[in-house]
Length: 198
Length: 381
Image (cartoon, rainbow over all chains, first blue to last red; front, top):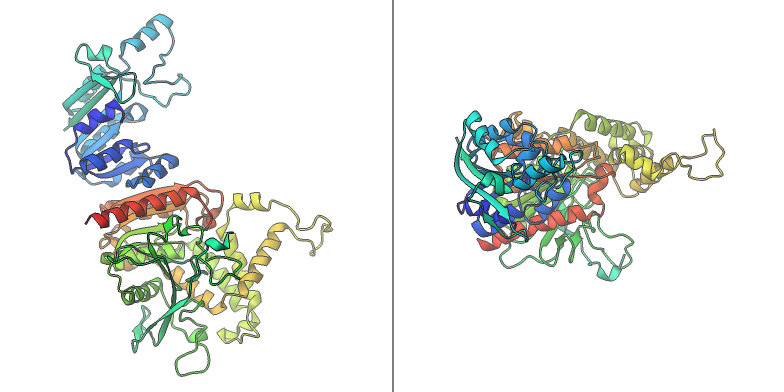
């Protein structure tokens, strides 16, 4: 499994209820179901990915995360997970508030736009950065929100949520390998993973 | 079709011996017979049974063939059989003809007890609830306490929903496909035009017709209307377009035929050889009266599922205009708000409502995976 998902999964208590928003092909939810015995629910918009999740025996709904989340009552899940999706959300503030409403805890992860390679691309080349984590051109990128680890901290203060746990990571050559970045994370980490709460 | 691979199945009959089986309408029926077929084997734990519920004009013959001379296998043979998505090497599959039908179960064409003539329009009005209550008796008779899954499309899907709220302890999971919680005005309208076609056929004679002089014209028009609703604008463009049946046909006459006209006419003519006109009237009316929200939730879709316990897989098709995706999403929404375990997928398809009966790997894989996951859980417990 991908290194960032491994770190994220290690934070989930066994037997929890989990809502995975933008769960893709369900790799994380499948792992959590098998290894941590969680009761999973996933929401994914793409038919093909939903079908793959259901084939794996996961409980997944096809739909728009921004709308589907509104149907759940307060504190419906132990965890709400927004993994590698925040950068594609039109209204991050609205969605973060919603995940903090339906989840007792929330976990959010995103690619760090403050990474040194990205900074150098913009500074040196004067072009919109393209990296392994953000592999798109400016005109075809689904990542409409570019943020850094520092931005997320400021965002937390502004919206008024707490960061309980954080991990700044840098995956290795192979996607399942990687390391935690302790030194200047906003410069050297490619991803940030945060457990947040009210 | 490889006939060697097809399983031979046999139609069986189950009788409800109650003096009076009271129906939802308040009237009662005596001597109810239900035709059913089974596929695969019930295991010792009796936890591998799947109930299939059929649509408007289908029957108990969901899969396999009756004998080697059969030209066509059962109506959902693409789904049910050894190694298929509903794998009869693993599961025990049951399908019965609905109450009010004409394929072996008691319906308006059955002979009235103590009389020599069929019920005709003396048959009491039956509902989806009545159909489901009778199916439950069959499952009791087969000594199955809990079904692994209940599934069906269209009118069969309505029965699935009714099962899920009426007998929640008798099922692990539910797979309603291309269906709705209540018939829309559009669906009722189509059904009414179809019924009018039958009842305005002089041969219908208030439902008292002989086998020699049936309202075939009316029934075939009813079927043609039905077929239009099962297709979609796009599927008709792709399938027929404006093509003529015979290129040599002279234009601007009533004799020449567009392909779509020939297709509908053929479907209508084929249908009258196998279906009873009165049965069509009763079953379409049962579909029109179906309203899960009103009956089980006092008008609230969320409340209608208060008793449900099953794990759900809801499937819709993008080009289905009879029971569009919005109606499946309403089901999903109500299930979610009851914190029930629900999966949902809208399958992108050009083939309209009928898509669920066609071979489709996407549906196969989802159903296979879903059933395996439900079965695994019952085995664990």
